[in-house]
Length: 197
Image (cartoon, rainbow, N blue to C red; front, side):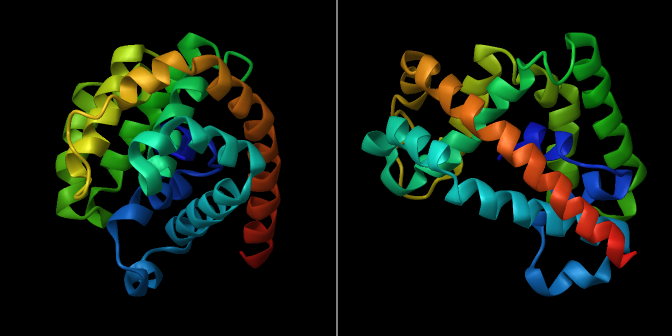
């Protein structure tokens, strides 16, 4: 899952911070954070593990695999944020906007825990309101290009965005089969985390 899904699947401010930090820290450093942030890191990992094993995600990867092979999962993650952002059964548009603003506010209020490379990205994320704008085709196109730019072994002009556009219906069906299961799983993981507190 990508940034919006991870931020939606949280239950506390600390978990928001941890969910975002997971991709920016070394494993050995995870225990240097407050318990609430550690819970977010744990939640992030549980989400990724569940996502990677879900049959609907395996189907979604087939959309991108002919173009990007082992990188297909990264593009599925980005694509799923489009469907999360447009899922009005989760939030209205006004609520998604409020959610995005809250996430930026929470992250900025925990600046002391954020590594420098994440702080730089957060400035761009907030300025261009990535979280809210994942609902737009251009927002996903921007994110897909970001993944292509960072991928060491991929050409930068592979038509991944075109594959997304041409397979929206299939990807939507994968999302519909997958995301309710992920929500239920996340609630179970959070309940276990709360028992530890």
